[in-house]
Length: 187
Image 1: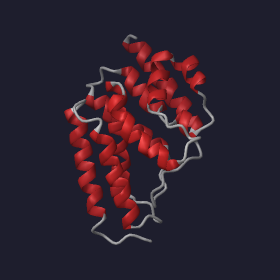
Image 2: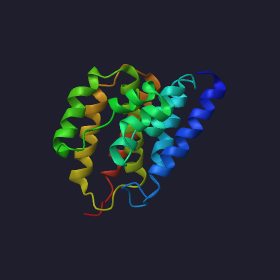
Image 3: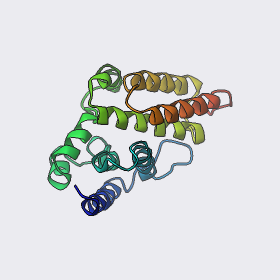
């Protein structure tokens, strides 16, 4: 994919993803538009790759569409190609499974995923921890925050070694999120 094709594909991905996530908000007390998360994940990956992996950045923009909207994997493949669709599929949880099973499977299967998928997982967890640090969910008490942070660390353990830049960003986000535990939360 040359530069002009990459730019067109990325713009098309943003348009598609924004329309699919239109009414979704982040869980934090501020309730930011969900697309802010997608933008942050894409930005983290663009920086980490020096802008040299358009497929990965496009997949970042689309990474939650199958999991969190009515979008199918087939749609992603038809619109964005097999490579993007495969990467999105690799990071998509099976929502038919109980939440505890999905979380356990992320920890167990992440180390065996492709390098790109592990980079995407790492950027995704970094964005989530940054959100917790800046706008924790109002209904999450300290125990739930700590549980999420511990789980994110366990998932990211399977991603270590794919990108020093992303690992530093995650560690910074984790430290900032841990600092929220020292401040009062709404229970």
